[in-house]
Length: 378
Image 1: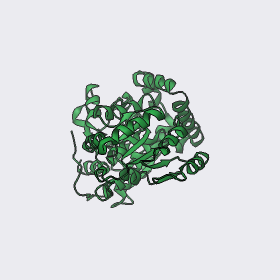
Image 2 (image 1 turned 60 degrees about the horizontal axis):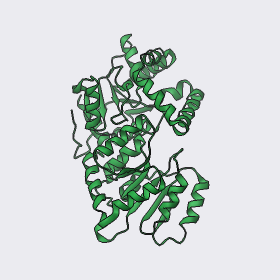
Image 3 (image 1 turned 180 degrees about the vertical axis):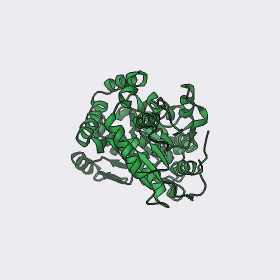
Image 4 (image 1 turned 90 degrees about the horizontal axis):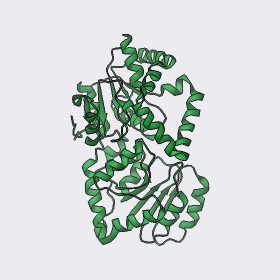
């Protein structure tokens, strides 16, 4: 079932929503807080976001998160093996369902918050909730917000749910092919920052037909390969405006600021920033790894991607979505990135315009409001 983006943002019923998330990867928290922030615009006290694992075992949670990041960055093919094993394992669901401390803590939270509906952006919660339901401890409806595209791990649906919200039709088709009830899968888009919904029609990137300089945004994540080399190669291109968001790497930031001096076109070197939504909407192309939140935010902003890195497993589907729609390219070296960008901007951006048209067909910047609308009506 596909839900069209709402033309007007309306939240009429003060439904109390409990949103469950986890800090593993960028997509889970991004989706959770986007949904919460959208709902809080009209109902600030009727929504709460909880990371159960940081509450139950904060030290273990911190260590396991660091281990997860190190594994996907330094040993991606090991992570691919683990991811594939989790997808097919009959042991993992049993282990998750047996997490008694987490399950009892979750029950306590649910009883205290007394929500009308629960949404989760991390698949483990479905197993805990289903076990509580089997014990007749809860009856509140639970929806799962799937933060991956196409290459979706079976943990997302094995435990069941009242319904699933997925980011695109390709993901819905994939889940149906795995035997998930089609009537329970809702194509709403990925819930992105409300900033996109409020500004997508007012912030306009320059037209390439008017001899305007193309704007290229480079987002550097932890573990990004060839980060400095790619940034330097971009800054060497005098015909483009360049923005590099380097995160908390102050050493790299200072190097790039020095290199950017004297360019004929503007260059902006940023550290950590909360303005990624605005940057995506004002640049023509983003160069980045195929992370869940970044890919979906680029789609919401109608900003084609040059994917320079893919974590095997969950990120493969993010790039596959772009590949199927002929949006951007996979360019894993600095040389390939520059070659792809030159091809995109050639002849007043003929190829870029094709990418832009295709990505706009996927864009659903009001997805968070669409999900809320469904929850209210059901």
